Image 1 (cartoon, rainbow, N blue to C red):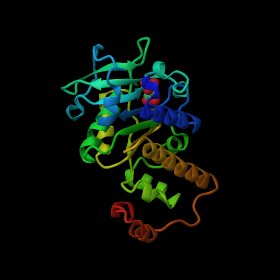
Image 2: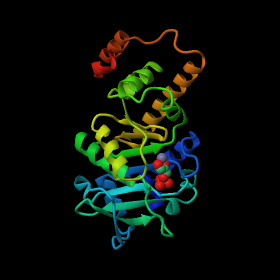
Image 3: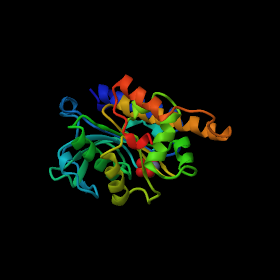
Image 4: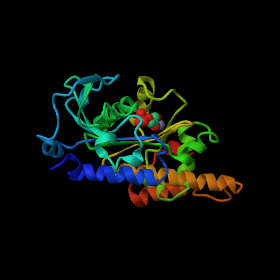
Length: 272
Ligand code: 13P
Ligand code: ZN
């Protein structure tokens, strides 16, 4: 059995390709990580190189000690993952302190995990804590319409959430905790990782102004679906704004009814 043939790796590759087809991953744009489940780690036995060299993560994530992550490579094109997984993705194992990682499979020819690995891992760390270990996926995409809106709407969590919720009835059910915004920052380091993970305490969708979107989910499907739903809602909003703006919309009371009917808690701060 090769690593590329394992079910969860196949699923990760398929969803990476779907994300490319969506138009969210020009060139090397965006990156994707999955915290491998315990029963899947068992399947890796004998297939990974545990003697690989350690590298500093750049941030400390003690609750991710000894975890294994599937992750896309820095500078790698997501469209190429399906053609050559070993060159474009890898499995990184975190050390017992949560300070270093080693690439135990893939990312051949000297490739490294994404430059956003600190943001992914700090967000994984927070999500593991707040979801009791359920949440396993972080996806970062260069979503055209969500990015476009960061040039037009105020960079305010409440305004963004409410506008996106109004664009499709399913949105508040799919992201009931709303959308958090990181103002423009230099990508790829510890500072943006910290800002993102702070927002991940509350939100599953975090926008990086003028750059892209981070989402978090329990499964690969749920994370992909969340990105797709938020980006579609942004696309509708861009169209609505281009057609002269809203003439009617879903009201705060409609949202309260929806929350009741679907048994989801919609925070009142978004319904003013
Ligand atoms: P990587 O190629 O290092 O993953 O970077 C792409 C990106 O989207 C940076 O934010
Ligand atoms: Zn990016």
